[in-house]
Structures are given as structure tokens and as C-alpha cells.
Length: 612
Image (cartoon, rainbow, N blue to C red; front, side, top):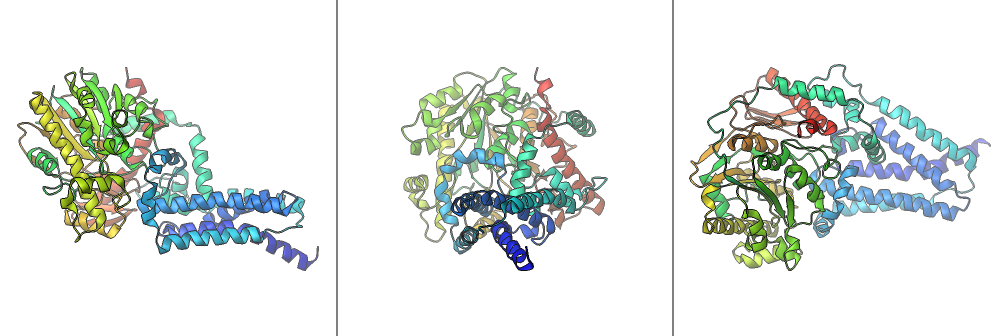
């Protein structure tokens, strides 16, 4: 082979590999991955070139070029679709899907129309570029190459990239100080932040490593259990306080709102909820960090168990057989309560049929099993107006009911049937001076508010209101608004320090109104309720809001944290109103440890031996 032939061979090989690398580069550039890890960094580019070589080798194996082109097109198309899906998810959530998150696809398909609102010039440009790279690859796929030489060479190159690329990351610190997460090597091993991880690896290695870690056996279970024990032993033990046992023996109706954000809940949009918030115990600085891409179930799991789900996947399917003896349902069932849960969706969504049993609820009730159609089931008022459902809530005392509302779910545009229905029910929200989506969100929230109005009426008529506690919290901020600037403006006007601030309050007849300004997070709800109901406060990641030894904080999955005094994001202090450098360093270290212990609890089924 002369020099000219060798150059032609190399050129042909590059043409076969390049489109897969360009797909990766397009995705990382379009989604702002450079903010996490440079686009030009060697490791992710090597990974993608290596996978490109592997895919090209597979396509060069067939003797007929036509067959190879078809195979090339199929492989590329799968990854192009994957890239478009991840780009769409990033546009909504500023994060990406791990493999386990795709188990939620059935839930997401019902709202596929919402994605139409994402289509703009940027979206079209990304799709066109991905299509162009694929077309070039199919067109330029070489023929008459010495397959016996080229294909093994490509395979060897792929293997080398797998060996070399991970060694190009920054070394894992010998001592994991507060800023350990900034080490690319540490994050590659931990693989918990989807945005950071895709920036580190590119899409192909992102999937491969995610799959590898999903099946990797846990050889450190004993060490992790010791780490958990040490964490709880070092933390101040819970002590009784003036709120301990205040609500003991009362019925509980725990309600998780859907997208009723802090700027949505007010006298105009939700008069009943606003009244209950004023008259009850209002947790004014309550935050809902989102560890899993299943935002609703993320909060559902955290509130019920006092533990956050994995940041790199879901727990709805992987942990349905784990033991959660300290979940709210189990704690109250142990005190003789009859516990049931209620929501619009079928039991298979988020595996609620199994998960709610693990939380201690006797049965999960879907409104779809009782409604005439999906639209009726989507109206939250139906949960209370349907006699069969309401009877199951209150038929046996003391009862503990868990209601998950639905009406506020995205989307909020003209093509969403429930939005059209809500605006028809409440035409006063057709305000041309506001974005249509805001009108839709507010009208949908009014459906939820009327559910509470009907619930209070029925409880009073049945003589149950005086002995019933209603605890309300939100699943997440209203991320379904497609105009981020509008969302941020409304949230800021409502006084929120972060988008993640959401409503949370407890109401009961005769409650002395009070406002708790301590910074709290979703996992704090379980121990707070346990204390109020006079139950043993379990060792979970959350703390009792009324515990004097608890200063209050929220820990976010990207390594950030929030206290009353400061906010840190991606390892950097965003604002600081009084914390010393030493306190900041300690909080950074604590946030990292918090997440490690949280995941270790899930990894080891830590509470299994405490279930008896």
C-alpha cells in the first residue's frame, strides 16, 4: 500500500467515524455542557471517537455496501433520536435522562403534545444538524476497504479509548474535602449528576457507564452501613419539644399538590388553600430539591420516606421490594390507622401500586377506575365528589389518607384538553394581559382549590373536620411553563429565593396560626409529622422542623445547598449573608456527605432489619 492509498484509507475511515463524533459535539454544545466540562477536553471526544469507530466497524463488516449503509443509518438514527430526546429533556429540566428514567416513558407519552411548545429555531437547527451528519455518514461510507485490517483496527482503537480516556480526568482526591465533586475523576466514579456526567463522557459513554453501574454488584455494603450508622450517631438525637404529640390520635389527610407553585397559591387563584395556609402552620421557606427526573414521584418518595431518590436514576421500579418501616403510612398503620392513597393515574405509573404498599398504604386508588373518562378523572374535585372514593378515605377511623392531585399538571396551552376545560369552568382567568400558559396554570389550580373546598364541606357534614389534620405540600415548581423568563419573574415576585421554593403547611380546626421561617426541604416533612403525631422520630435524612438543634437547610443534587444565610451552587457561593469561610467549607463537606449517606441507605436497604 503506497502513501496515496494509505491517506485515502485514513480519509475514508475518518469519514465513517466523524458523524458520530459530530452528533456528540452538537448535543454537548446545544445543551451548555461546556459550563460543566470543556467541549474540547480530550476524554469525552476520545470516548465518542472510539464509539464511532466501533459503530463504523460493525457497518463495514457486510460485504455489500448497501447493507452496510442501511446498518449505518439505523445505528445513527437510534442515537440521533436519543440525542433529540435528551435535548428536549434538557430544555425542560436542565438535566438529562439516565437509563432507568426511561422507565417513566409511559407516563410521559400522555404529555407528548407539550413538546411541541419547545420547537423553535434552536430546536430545528439541532435536529437539522443531526440529520446532516447522519446523511453524510451514510453517503460517504467507504467501500472496497480491507475489512480484515480496518475492522480489527477500529475495535482496537475503541478498546484503547476505553482504557485511556478515564485516565485523563483529574485524579480523585485522597481526602474527599468539600470540593471533591469538582474533581472530574470523582464525578466519573460517582456518576450522579446527569448534566456533569454527559459533559464528561459524551452520550455513548454516558449510556455505557450508566448501564455498567446499574448492574455492578455492591461490594461495600458493610462499609456503607457503618457510614450510615456513624452519620446518625454524630447527628444530635431528636428531643421532644413544645410541638411533640400536638396532633396525636387525629386523622391525617396528606395532600401532594401538582404544580401549585408559591406564586400560584394566593387569594385570587386558590382562596381555600390560601385561607388554610394563613390559619395553619405555614412553612414559608420549604424547598423541593429534584433528585430524580420523575419530578412528581421524586417528591412523593422523599416526603413519604425522609430519603431522597437516587440522583442518577429512579427508585419506583428498583426499590419497590425494599423496606421502609419509617414511611408515614407504615408509622401510622402501626398506631392502628387505616391508610389509603388516591390519585388520578393508574397504579402502574411510577409503580405506585407496589411503592405505596411499601410506604404502608393498604391500597392505591386510581380515579380512572371510577370516572367516566380521563377528563373527569383529571379534575381533582372528582377525588372528593365521587362517593366511592370519598367513602374509602373516611370509612374507618383513625384514617391516614394520601392524596396526589393532578389538575395542575402540564401543559397549559390551547392544545391541552384539561386547560381548555379549566378555563371553561373559570372564564375569569381568561386575561389577555397575561401569557396564555399563566391563565391555564391558574385555572387548573382553581380546580385543585375547589377540591379542598368540597373536602372541608364533606368532612364537616360527616362530623370529621374537628378531628382531622390536613397537611399540604407541592411536588415541584411549575416547570411546565415553557417561557423560563415568565416563570422566574412570577417566582421572584412571590418572594422566592429559588425556583424550588414551594408551599407547605399544616391545618386543623382550632390551630393557632404560625409561620416557620427556617429553611426546610422535602425530607423534613416525615420527621416533622412524626413529632407532631407523637410517634418516634426515625433516623432518616430529614429533621423535625421544630427541633431546636436543627438550623435548617436544603441539599440539592448538583452539590448545591441553601441555608438561612447563604446559597451555594455547583460548588460556588452565589450569595452569602453572614456565613464565615469555615462555615461555608463545613456546609460544602456536609452536603457531599449528606448525598453519600442518602444513597448508601438506598444501596443497602438499610431499614430492612428494622422492619420487624
